[in-house]
Amino acid sequence: MGLYDLSFYDVINRNAFCFKDDPAWFEVDDGRTLTFSQYKAEVDRLACGLQRAGIRKGDRVAVLSQNSLEYFLLYGAAAALGAIMLPINWRLSADEVAYNINDCEPILLFVGQSFEQTITQIRDKLGSVREIYHLGAGSAEPFVSFQSLLENNGEFERAEVSWDDGFVIIHTAAVAGRPRGALL
Image (cartoon, rainbow, N blue to C red; front, side, top):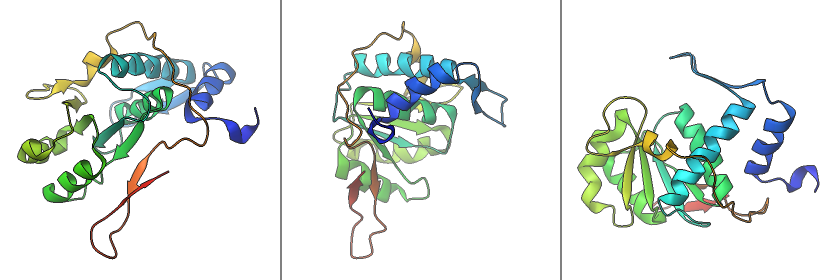
């Protein structure tokens, strides 16, 4: 396997082995830190939780949030399962958010606290979304707590994922009409 034949999850595994106790994440706002091995352990627990929630290879997982540790963990867990991330631009209007979500048909949606009102406003328009999870601390009502996905032993069935499998859908700038999702 060459350097460029690695999936994102392969890189997580390699870094956990090579840089085990080195810092992988430092969050300035609340001082949370994770080493590379701790990051991999959290990614594995989240992958297990997502798998139990029904996520399989090729399924889409949407996120409407600003950057956070949970967001970073979602990328790793999706990579482990061969799922496709759908980051939603948090600057969009509620109607634009609904369009992007419906365009890509994610099964799960993760929402940062700042955007819960937007999702509540459009919730009934999101046909493919089976469950909505609250990212971060505090009450999750009316959404499901992100932490509930981490309450497991981290054992999951890893998907067979190639370095060139699609991993993220980014919507275009919509120069000629509606934005289109580009699979990268």
